Image 1 (cartoon, rainbow, N blue to C red):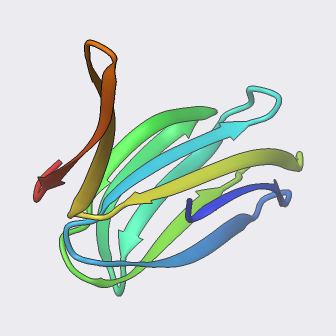
Image 2: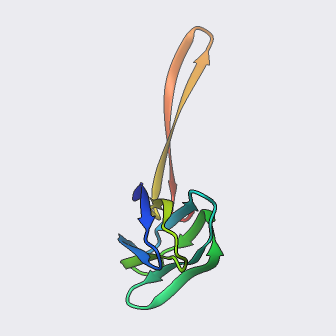
Length: 125
């Protein structure tokens, strides 16, 4: 988990968050305006100026997945263009490019049981 937070988006304002990610990371991004009101713009930018994702007039984005092209700092920008403050929920998760999955298996033959540990290596998701 990178972050899971609520924030206030000011009247005619913006809120910006910065996070660092490594090349190949999968970023799982969810956002929701608590009252279902649209924001003018939601954008994810690879600094200094490479826009990776932009959504206009949206109140909710669920489980948007992006692959990080290069190690660096990424900006998450939320823009409000109305005369009403908004309350938003943000959740960002990072899935590294290499995961080790462990699976425990209970193997029983007759009255004898043993536990097997299987490790699976994923280089790509």
